[in-house]
Amino acid sequence: MEKRRQLIVDLVAQTQRLTRLAAQATGNSTPASAWRLLAILETEGPQRVGTLASAVRVSQPALTQLASHLCEQGLVTKGPDPTDARAAILTLTGEGATAIADWRAEIGGALSPYFASLNDEDWSHLAATVSLLSSLDREPS
Amino acid sequence: MEKRRQLIVDLVAQTQRLTRLAAQATGNSTPASAWRLLAILETEGPQRVGTLASAVRVSQPALTQLASHLCEQGLVTKGPDPTDARAAILTLTGEGATAIADWRAEIGGALSPYFASLNDEDWSHLAATVSLLSSLDREPS
DNA sequence: CGCTTTTCCATAAGCCGACTATATAACTTG
DNA sequence: CAAGTTATATAGTCGGCTTATGGAAAAGCG
Image 1 (cartoon, rainbow over the protein chains, first blue to last red):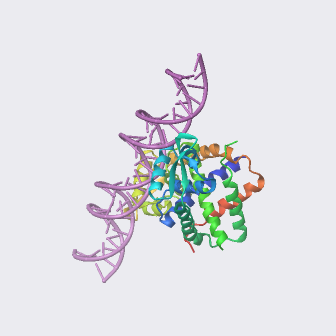
Image 2: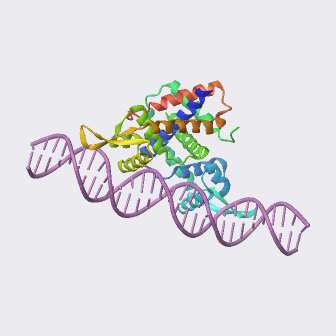
Image 3: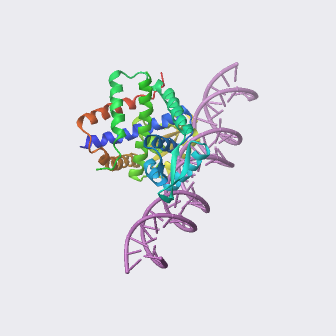
């Protein structure tokens, strides 16, 4: 289906635009990878550095560095893994959870004007798209 | 509508993930801003640097630098504006158009496995979402 | 058990894209 | 034409991400 492949391409192009729009509209300079990391810790619970690196889709050193920044800010804590002395486990703090909530409010507020003209049908398409995107990157088939 | 605001947030989160997935799946290091620039030139025709900077959503110096890179690669050309000697006008070259086409093929090929399990209804939601996203950043209302 | 190999994370060095501030040149206005 | 404004270019800097590498712990194997 060549048409579907084209649709994927268009979707990616639009997501890049929206990502950029969100970054610019909020003015928040916190990198997207940080938000992905916090969101993963929130939904999946404490995780190892290596696991997080692949989940966030950055290199392991990048995640180590990101984690140290977030530790300094008090948004996550790094602790030992009782089952493996090499490993480090990152845990979301209460402040980290608050930071995510704040960011969500900020982005929602900044972007909702752009979505003001959507009708109910548009919203249902969006909802469906969000839910299917949420579950599509577990292993390409 | 608090639910809708939440949906926007989730959409942004998913688009960030997809953007990152696309970057990683293709291995193509060309920055997203370059693709946005080429795509704009393709659909809108030759444009001034300043106009492109805001369309691509980067600062003017960033676009100047990006343009010079793309010129070196032969993907765009920079020419004078006959109506304003200060201005520079960027134009997509044939090679530039080819580069976009190639990239689209690459991203479509790299990502389509992830979308293999979608049904017809999913695809129609995606199509609707793409089309509404395409037309949402002309001025927040 | 001891030794090798593998795994996990941290550190080092460097690249590249983006930003702010500033300079230069050209258009516009009074 | 002088003064102010606008369009782009340049300089300088910062931050995130990458590859390459190091060191320590676990796992595999004789």
